[in-house]
Length: 298
Image 1 (cartoon, one colour):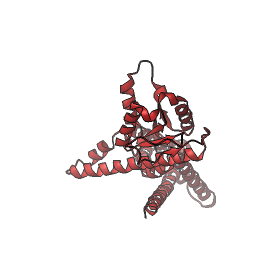
Image 2: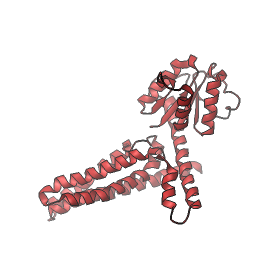
Image 3: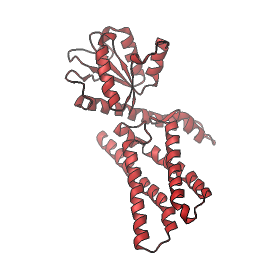
Image 4: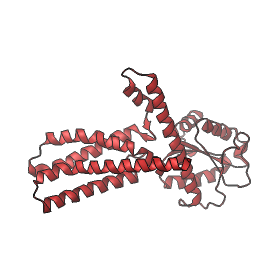
């Protein structure tokens, strides 16, 4: 999922609406000037949305290539390295200054949310998100290098700003707290009959929360490649988390059934084993993503 801005000429409103509906159905957050409220400051709102978006889609047409508004929005998107030009007319030539950007041809697109055109667009969106992540990491390194003497951690946090590679920090914190706290509550609930105390669950949560947060950050390059960087529980991370918990539970149950172990060991160790398994999976996928990226560059 990505935050998208659609720039178009008002004569092509029907094209913008069709594209916005399809992208929204693909789980993107789409903004176009239809979202302007009656009391909104027109220029200020557009500038803010264009600045905050992760990719800007410009619809080139006979009307938009002559629109000062569209040209200005496209120019700002170029400055932010997030321009994605599309056209519904294969005969349109991009305006001067934008000819070096590949224009995606949507002339044969019928509006289906699953199509080759939208798949190509999603690939381009993911490439932009990769670039944003890479640039953010480079900026972290630059600032950390300039601020030695005990301030590196603070600079790492401040340089990321409100997101980490496209994942909002608020979602990261909320997701990590919910997952780590949920594991601790599960452990407490199941272990209640075996003498677990609330203090033990609280200590477990304090350990689980940062571990889950670190694992989700480590998974972010994979989420970027899949185009789901803004969710804490993107499909891949959620699947492997559930898989790890299920596998650890089966393993613990098998031990409790066939080997003489204390049930309290099973209750206490299953969440830990699940996180160990998830750690292995996340870093294997991270390695594979990095390897695949390098192979494409060779």
